Image (tube, helix red, strand yellow):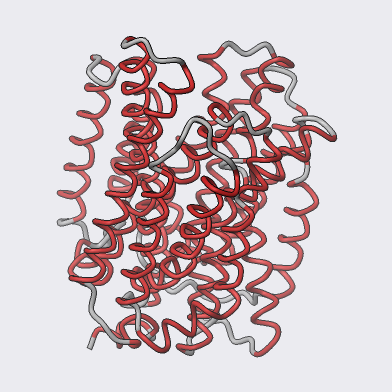
Length: 480
């Protein structure tokens, strides 16, 4: 729905929407620092503890597409408020959870609420800002929240866990969730949903949600049960069959959950493929570098959080206007490709990963390049994924691009973690010390991550349509 609010109120609304999104993004990483405390307090085994993270990823990845489509049918504002409500109540349940089962169930509910918020927030922002220059600035702010939120989560998780307790990484969401809900009610007017009158494609929703959840489940358990195990292969096979069935359904129903014509739009198709590869590279940067700093360099959680600050500061500077100026000056193709190639250089620096590395010599240079690359590339990538789409399908396009990032990150992390683990075991078996073996495993993961970023950058350079209008045009008119 086009929101008829002007001037400062639109930017205030953007700030509130981004605060809601930041709360969701933080929760993907803030838990990692607190896992040892949660394990000790609730008596988790190593195997069961993984589900504190995986339960969230499972429902988050599974419900993104459905959340976006429901926003188109019933109103983006209504779904955003519903998602914030579910997420906030689930955070309360997590914070007071007395048992393993309740914590894992509440984390799954958090993922469901987070999926809905993430799927419709991008649509709300695109509909608030229709003028090209303002839209580019708004998307820059959104891009910073998405790209920088994860590393902020590590720092905040360290502060809350060390100064208070693990419960507060969840309870801190309560006042934020209440404030976001109240301010959205005040700032975002209601309106008729752009896709109102259409029907929900129930068969499509069931098949694609089941497919995504099976795929995420298989991926997050792959390292534990083995990638060649009957469980992993069976689940991935079932996910592939369900996805094929989903595509058949979408080609035949009158009101498809995901019109396949969407991928005939070149920028939508290219940006989603690049998004999958870029998310895999981002996860290599974020998770593998955090492991390297903790397990090889023996940094504390607080030091790890501080190590990400240069990247966060650089991304913040780009989100506050530099990225928008680049898009208005050069269009989307050159900033996207250039940013990804700079990020490739940052990952290549990390691929050195020396055992006796230091913060200034071996961590900060890579962080600076990665912050610069993410700051430049994220905005044009989101614009490319959204701008050729009609308003009635903006929630769907938002769900698709978020699903691409989520699945790319999950698959990328699983692949990179497996490669690092295999390399580490091989080096240990050859008689190397644990730090040397771990460093060798992380080096391989960074090299492959750099490869992902490089391919994404080349796709953007060679296949995206150039020009400012391709990136910041309004709706389907930008296609012509």
